[in-house]
Length: 282
Image 1 (spheres, rainbow, N blue to C red):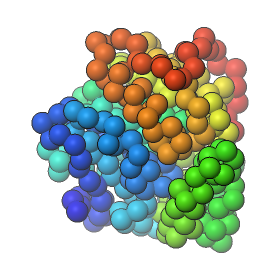
Image 2: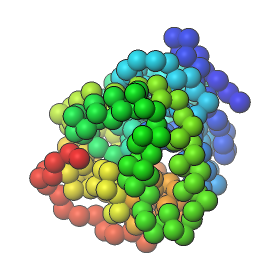
Image 3: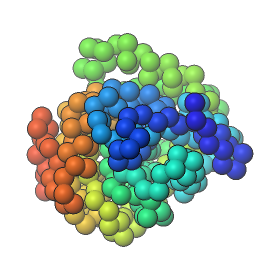
Image 4: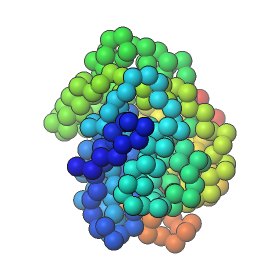
C-alpha cells in the first residue's frame, strides 16, 4: 500500500481506476477512513481516483497535539506529489470538504475543481473545543452515540445495520489523539471570509437529512461565497458516500464531465435552491 512521509508522519493512500484518466482525490470525514468511499469508487469510471487516510485516521499516523487545516492540506499536497499528480479535482466530506476548500485557497494551482460535501466553512468553536477535551480525556467511545446520530440517518441505520456497525467500530477503535487533533483543526477553522477568492469550478453537495452540517447555515454559506458555485441536494445524512453512493457519483461525474460552468446531473436529487446567509453554525 502506498505511503507518503511528511515531517516524519506516515500518510496512507490508495489509487484506483484508470491511471490515464482525470485525477480525482477523495477525502474522508472526521472519524472515518478512506473506505467511506468504497461504494462510490466503482461508479467513477474514467477517473484516476486517489483516496487517503487523513492524518490521525485509518492507517495514517496519529501524532499527539492539535492539527491545523493548513497542515492537513499540506499532507494532501505531499500525497499528490508522491502520486505524480500535478492537479486534481478534490471532493471531500465534512472535514475532507474543509481541507478541500483550504487547498483551493492555499494551493489553487493544484485544484482543478472543488466538491465540498456535507460540510461547512464555519463551525461552533465552543462545541468543538468541548469535543476535543472529551475525546482526550475519555476516548472516542465518549462521543460515539453523538457522532453516529449525526453521521447517519435513522432510516439508514435500520436498513443497513452492517454498514452502520462498521462505521461505529472504526470510530470506537481509532486513536483518540487522531480524532482530537482533527477536531482541533475544525475548532480553529477560519476560512469563510476567504472563500470569495476561490475561482475554480465548485459543486456543493448537501445532504437533506444532514443534522451535522445542514445546508441552511452551512452549505448555503459556501454557495453564496464562491462565485458560480452550484449545489445538488441528496437524500442522505452526513455520510453521503455511504447513504447515497449512486446519486453522489452521478453528481460528481456529471459536474466534472460538463463544460466549465455546466450544470451537474440532478436526476434523483432535489433541484438547486436560492440561498442567503441566514443560518448559524451548529
